[in-house]
Image (tube, rainbow, N blue to C red; front, side, top):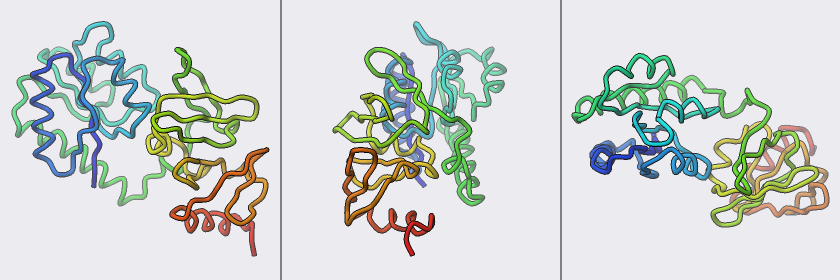
Length: 240
Protein backbone atom coordinates (compact mmCIF):
# COMPACT_ATOMS: atom_id res chain seq x y z
CA UNK A 1 0.00 0.00 0.00
CA UNK A 2 1.26 3.46 -0.92
CA UNK A 3 0.44 6.51 1.21
CA UNK A 4 1.23 9.70 -0.72
CA UNK A 5 2.47 12.42 1.65
CA UNK A 6 2.76 16.20 1.69
CA UNK A 7 4.77 18.18 4.27
CA UNK A 8 3.57 21.71 5.11
CA UNK A 9 5.83 23.58 7.54
CA UNK A 10 7.52 26.98 7.48
CA UNK A 11 10.60 25.63 9.34
CA UNK A 12 13.18 24.06 6.96
CA UNK A 13 14.75 21.91 9.69
CA UNK A 14 11.36 20.55 10.73
CA UNK A 15 10.59 19.66 7.11
CA UNK A 16 13.95 17.88 6.80
CA UNK A 17 13.22 15.75 9.88
CA UNK A 18 9.82 14.61 8.61
CA UNK A 19 11.21 14.02 5.11
CA UNK A 20 13.95 11.82 6.59
CA UNK A 21 11.39 9.85 8.61
CA UNK A 22 9.15 9.35 5.57
CA UNK A 23 12.09 7.83 3.71
CA UNK A 24 12.40 5.16 6.41
CA UNK A 25 8.83 3.87 6.03
CA UNK A 26 8.25 1.82 2.88
CA UNK A 27 4.52 2.54 2.70
CA UNK A 28 5.08 6.32 2.60
CA UNK A 29 5.91 8.28 -0.56
CA UNK A 30 6.83 11.97 -0.36
CA UNK A 31 5.04 13.93 -3.09
CA UNK A 32 5.99 17.44 -1.99
CA UNK A 33 7.33 19.67 0.76
CA UNK A 34 6.23 23.29 1.10
CA UNK A 35 6.52 26.13 3.59
CA UNK A 36 3.02 27.62 3.50
CA UNK A 37 -0.65 26.81 2.94
CA UNK A 38 -0.80 28.49 -0.48
CA UNK A 39 1.80 26.08 -1.88
CA UNK A 40 -0.01 23.19 -0.21
CA UNK A 41 -3.26 24.19 -1.91
CA UNK A 42 -1.53 23.93 -5.30
CA UNK A 43 -0.23 20.42 -4.51
CA UNK A 44 -3.67 19.22 -3.45
CA UNK A 45 -5.15 20.37 -6.74
CA UNK A 46 -2.56 18.81 -9.01
CA UNK A 47 -1.72 15.55 -7.20
CA UNK A 48 -3.40 12.83 -5.19
CA UNK A 49 -2.41 13.34 -1.55
CA UNK A 50 -3.34 10.78 1.12
CA UNK A 51 -1.62 12.29 4.16
CA UNK A 52 -0.50 15.80 5.18
CA UNK A 53 2.06 16.50 7.89
CA UNK A 54 0.75 19.94 8.79
CA UNK A 55 2.39 22.55 11.01
CA UNK A 56 -0.07 24.66 12.99
CA UNK A 57 1.85 27.89 13.54
CA UNK A 58 2.57 29.30 10.07
CA UNK A 59 2.50 32.89 8.77
CA UNK A 60 -0.56 34.24 6.90
CA UNK A 61 -2.67 31.06 7.18
CA UNK A 62 -2.38 28.72 10.17
CA UNK A 63 -2.54 24.97 9.76
CA UNK A 64 -5.87 24.92 11.58
CA UNK A 65 -7.43 27.52 9.26
CA UNK A 66 -6.00 25.76 6.21
CA UNK A 67 -7.52 22.43 7.28
CA UNK A 68 -10.90 24.08 7.93
CA UNK A 69 -10.86 25.49 4.39
CA UNK A 70 -10.64 22.05 2.73
CA UNK A 71 -13.87 20.37 1.61
CA UNK A 72 -12.57 16.81 1.51
CA UNK A 73 -9.19 16.80 3.26
CA UNK A 74 -6.89 13.77 3.27
CA UNK A 75 -5.61 12.33 6.54
CA UNK A 76 -3.76 14.95 8.60
CA UNK A 77 -1.08 14.67 11.27
CA UNK A 78 -0.47 17.98 13.03
CA UNK A 79 3.11 18.89 13.92
CA UNK A 80 3.76 21.76 16.33
CA UNK A 81 5.82 22.93 19.29
CA UNK A 82 2.71 24.06 21.17
CA UNK A 83 0.79 21.40 23.11
CA UNK A 84 -2.16 23.74 23.81
CA UNK A 85 -3.40 23.16 20.25
CA UNK A 86 -3.94 19.43 20.80
CA UNK A 87 -7.63 19.66 21.73
CA UNK A 88 -8.50 21.82 18.73
CA UNK A 89 -6.57 19.44 16.51
CA UNK A 90 -8.53 16.41 17.59
CA UNK A 91 -11.79 18.35 17.29
CA UNK A 92 -10.92 18.62 13.60
CA UNK A 93 -10.67 14.81 13.43
CA UNK A 94 -6.96 14.71 12.62
CA UNK A 95 -5.19 11.35 12.66
CA UNK A 96 -2.65 12.37 15.29
CA UNK A 97 -0.76 15.24 16.90
CA UNK A 98 3.07 15.32 17.07
CA UNK A 99 5.04 17.65 19.34
CA UNK A 100 8.36 19.00 18.06
CA UNK A 101 11.07 17.87 18.19
CA UNK A 102 9.42 14.72 16.87
CA UNK A 103 11.09 11.41 17.86
CA UNK A 104 10.98 8.66 15.23
CA UNK A 105 9.11 6.17 17.41
CA UNK A 106 6.30 8.67 17.96
CA UNK A 107 6.24 9.49 14.23
CA UNK A 108 5.98 5.79 13.42
CA UNK A 109 3.09 5.32 15.84
CA UNK A 110 1.21 8.19 14.17
CA UNK A 111 1.70 6.99 10.59
CA UNK A 112 0.79 3.42 11.53
CA UNK A 113 -2.67 4.73 12.51
CA UNK A 114 -3.06 6.17 9.02
CA UNK A 115 -1.75 3.02 7.31
CA UNK A 116 -4.00 0.72 9.36
CA UNK A 117 -7.02 2.92 8.67
CA UNK A 118 -6.31 2.88 4.92
CA UNK A 119 -5.91 -0.90 4.93
CA UNK A 120 -9.17 -1.32 6.83
CA UNK A 121 -11.01 0.83 4.29
CA UNK A 122 -9.62 -1.27 1.43
CA UNK A 123 -10.60 -4.53 3.13
CA UNK A 124 -14.10 -3.28 3.87
CA UNK A 125 -14.55 -1.86 0.38
CA UNK A 126 -14.54 1.85 1.10
CA UNK A 127 -17.23 3.44 -1.06
CA UNK A 128 -15.94 7.00 -0.91
CA UNK A 129 -14.32 6.77 -4.33
CA UNK A 130 -17.44 5.35 -6.00
CA UNK A 131 -20.02 7.66 -4.47
CA UNK A 132 -20.33 11.40 -4.38
CA UNK A 133 -21.44 13.08 -1.15
CA UNK A 134 -21.05 16.38 -2.97
CA UNK A 135 -22.46 17.19 -6.39
CA UNK A 136 -19.71 19.60 -7.33
CA UNK A 137 -16.04 20.47 -6.98
CA UNK A 138 -14.01 23.66 -6.78
CA UNK A 139 -11.04 24.42 -9.04
CA UNK A 140 -8.61 27.32 -9.19
CA UNK A 141 -8.60 29.09 -12.56
CA UNK A 142 -7.83 32.63 -13.76
CA UNK A 143 -6.87 33.75 -10.23
CA UNK A 144 -10.26 32.73 -8.85
CA UNK A 145 -11.93 29.61 -7.46
CA UNK A 146 -14.76 28.25 -9.62
CA UNK A 147 -17.50 25.82 -8.60
CA UNK A 148 -18.26 23.14 -11.22
CA UNK A 149 -21.17 20.71 -10.95
CA UNK A 150 -20.28 17.12 -11.84
CA UNK A 151 -23.42 16.80 -13.96
CA UNK A 152 -22.29 19.71 -16.13
CA UNK A 153 -18.95 18.13 -17.08
CA UNK A 154 -18.83 16.61 -20.57
CA UNK A 155 -15.19 15.52 -20.70
CA UNK A 156 -11.73 16.51 -19.46
CA UNK A 157 -8.58 16.88 -21.54
CA UNK A 158 -5.05 16.67 -20.14
CA UNK A 159 -2.50 19.27 -21.24
CA UNK A 160 0.81 18.32 -19.54
CA UNK A 161 0.57 19.92 -16.06
CA UNK A 162 -2.86 21.41 -16.77
CA UNK A 163 -6.32 20.03 -17.46
CA UNK A 164 -9.13 21.51 -19.52
CA UNK A 165 -12.59 20.80 -18.15
CA UNK A 166 -15.35 21.05 -20.74
CA UNK A 167 -18.88 21.63 -19.47
CA UNK A 168 -22.13 22.02 -21.37
CA UNK A 169 -21.58 25.75 -21.92
CA UNK A 170 -17.94 26.62 -21.19
CA UNK A 171 -14.47 25.34 -20.47
CA UNK A 172 -12.07 25.83 -17.56
CA UNK A 173 -8.31 25.33 -17.40
CA UNK A 174 -6.58 24.59 -14.10
CA UNK A 175 -3.16 23.52 -12.85
CA UNK A 176 -3.62 19.83 -12.05
CA UNK A 177 -2.49 16.45 -13.34
CA UNK A 178 -4.87 13.96 -14.91
CA UNK A 179 -3.92 11.41 -12.26
CA UNK A 180 -4.67 13.84 -9.46
CA UNK A 181 -8.04 14.84 -10.91
CA UNK A 182 -9.00 11.26 -11.73
CA UNK A 183 -8.50 10.33 -8.06
CA UNK A 184 -10.85 13.11 -6.91
CA UNK A 185 -13.72 12.48 -9.37
CA UNK A 186 -16.52 10.04 -8.43
CA UNK A 187 -15.67 6.82 -10.29
CA UNK A 188 -19.33 5.94 -10.88
CA UNK A 189 -19.71 9.07 -13.02
CA UNK A 190 -16.37 9.43 -14.81
CA UNK A 191 -13.97 7.11 -16.63
CA UNK A 192 -10.49 7.65 -18.00
CA UNK A 193 -10.43 6.34 -21.57
CA UNK A 194 -7.11 7.74 -22.81
CA UNK A 195 -3.93 9.15 -21.28
CA UNK A 196 -5.27 12.59 -22.22
CA UNK A 197 -9.03 12.17 -21.69
CA UNK A 198 -11.54 11.52 -18.91
CA UNK A 199 -15.19 11.34 -19.94
CA UNK A 200 -18.55 11.64 -18.23
CA UNK A 201 -20.18 8.23 -18.71
CA UNK A 202 -23.63 9.81 -18.72
CA UNK A 203 -22.72 12.12 -21.64
CA UNK A 204 -21.80 9.35 -24.13
CA UNK A 205 -23.89 9.72 -27.31
CA UNK A 206 -22.38 6.89 -29.34
CA UNK A 207 -19.31 4.70 -29.81
CA UNK A 208 -17.81 4.04 -33.22
CA UNK A 209 -14.73 1.84 -33.23
CA UNK A 210 -12.22 3.56 -30.96
CA UNK A 211 -14.04 6.88 -30.83
CA UNK A 212 -16.56 8.06 -28.24
CA UNK A 213 -19.01 10.77 -29.31
CA UNK A 214 -19.72 13.34 -26.59
CA UNK A 215 -21.53 16.44 -27.78
CA UNK A 216 -19.60 17.63 -30.84
CA UNK A 217 -16.39 15.95 -29.70
CA UNK A 218 -15.03 12.54 -30.68
CA UNK A 219 -12.79 11.29 -27.88
CA UNK A 220 -10.28 8.50 -28.70
CA UNK A 221 -10.09 5.31 -26.63
CA UNK A 222 -6.51 4.42 -25.71
CA UNK A 223 -5.32 0.80 -26.00
CA UNK A 224 -4.50 0.46 -22.30
CA UNK A 225 -7.94 1.80 -21.28
CA UNK A 226 -10.06 -0.04 -23.86
CA UNK A 227 -10.78 -3.24 -21.90
CA UNK A 228 -11.87 -1.42 -18.73
CA UNK A 229 -14.00 1.03 -20.69
CA UNK A 230 -15.96 -1.69 -22.49
CA UNK A 231 -16.59 -3.43 -19.16
CA UNK A 232 -18.44 -0.24 -18.18
CA UNK A 233 -20.31 -0.29 -21.49
CA UNK A 234 -21.42 -3.89 -20.98
CA UNK A 235 -22.40 -3.20 -17.36
CA UNK A 236 -24.76 -0.47 -18.51
CA UNK A 237 -26.25 -2.76 -21.17
CA UNK A 238 -25.25 -0.52 -24.04
CA UNK A 239 -24.34 -3.56 -26.14
CA UNK A 240 -25.75 -7.06 -26.41
